[in-house]
Length: 394
Image 1 (cartoon, rainbow, N blue to C red):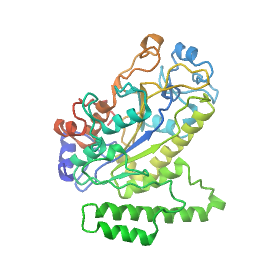
Image 2 (spheres, one colour; image 1 turned 120 degrees about the vertical axis):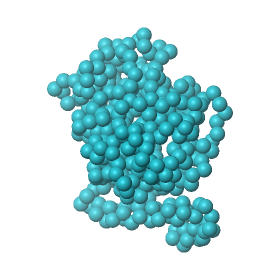
Image 3 (cartoon, rainbow, N blue to C red; image 1 turned 90 degrees about the vertical axis):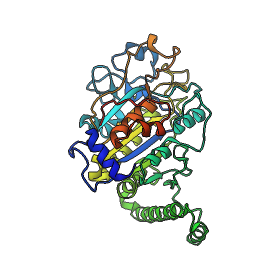
Image 4 (tube, rainbow, N blue to C red; image 1 turned 45 degrees about the horizontal axis):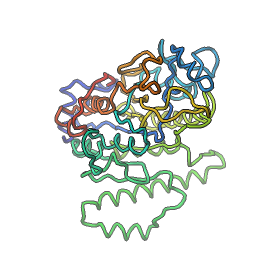
């Protein structure tokens, strides 16, 4: 599907971002960024089931208190759910303004509870009952049906989700202290690919690397006054936002450090600090996108959730169902979306985890249908064998 087809299709489906009521002639494709939290973050302490007595019984040492005047208590979202207080100044205001939503009981049918197996199956987006094709990730297939879309992986290696027939550049924004390939070597490598189908991607990768290096050099020079931490997610998110705003339309970034088997903490502690950093990064991303935020969707996912009960080490172990985040300036958010059940022992999957009631392929397929106006045939290309589900978030 080329841009003109997209514009006609989005108009036909009635899709529009808030404030624009549709895309006019000459408008670019909307921006989509997938943020993958590698390690399986503890979704039950992000989206807190504050109406569940069982939650507080199962997590005596790490539960987040229900909403109250205490700043360490959950932030009220609705009668049943609260948000971790670490996101008070960042993601919570986005939720209140309708620019963020959460989908609990989300994930995949993959039951291996293996980080690598489940990450692979999610990024490939293929039916679990069929042999895997490791050269066909779902974001690459999305690019193939959106002819002309500009993709970028903000990772040190091309993620599986971007593997496929469409050439996709990648750039590790955190590997900035010193380039592994200097300017002379860059020119040499570029000349080797001249005239091939990869020439554009190779040149693009070196150009983006050089821009990031120049920007970081300026930040380091001003560090005595601005105190910018080059390793913070917030800083990376601002760079990603500028590149997504000005150059790219489909992006991927992963964030590690979420495997909280030991010393997870509750309202404060290890997980709270990670959520704070993530929230600052997402808020910075939204701010840096400027007016393009109205045409932007960000989805935050993880390979699985954690066990609902805390373990003996003040942490949680590999689980099943998770909570996905959806953010964007044109979102119909401010709500907890998707199929839900009461959080109690009887509704746990295998008496230990959140169940998966909202399949990730159906959820993303529904978003892509609204975002790009994709029809059933295009959606089957992106997620073969899956039926898209529209949660009316756009």
